[in-house]
Length: 298
Image (cartoon, rainbow, N blue to C red; front, side):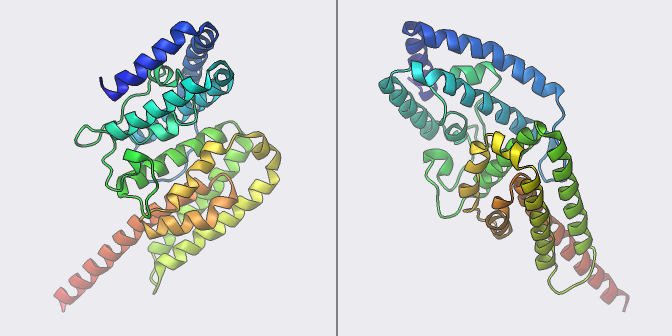
């Protein structure tokens, strides 16, 4: 029996003999479907980033599904025998290990029996890498969920996409706060781009300074919107900070450490660090090409 089949069979068995849980599960199928339909119509906050439109769309879908699964768990856990929940978590962990689908630790790890089938009904699909076997992980995190000293590129990019998507989802429910966060991020992105269009000895450090300044502006916004932040469930958003502090990319690791306490917008600033790396390389290539053309004319 495959790992997926084992989870599905166990869930079906529990739901078949636990009528109250089955009723809650059925209700969340309806409520979750309505949430997913509403998500398609809603506009998420937008800012400059590095994620493709298709990857951003998928990450947004995953963020909404995970939020539904968290809420399902809150209403279902009291109806589940502890032994059944423990067995289900073990099966999910085994499925993660055997399939290389490391996102399960995020999507299902905080939920409850029935979440796997609910996830599928809401549009969740197995992740497939180049070899069609889950996340193309080289650090082990996607396989066993154990945080390594340094994440591989694939896990690092996946976690950042999911952090940004969760941030957008949270801000969608706070439009005034979101508008000001978007303004800060757009301004930082513009200033960062101008840095790499200029000449200087250490453009990377200058760009880092722009992001730090943006972080301070986000902190001030966080204090102004403290009531909204206190009312929001930031557990999933916060869960990405520790693994991303193990990023192999120095710029990402540095900015996560600096800005994660600044509140919402920190994920967007971290994405700008990745954008800065690309802009830095492009600026260097342009500079060397100009030098080469100049020498050729001489």
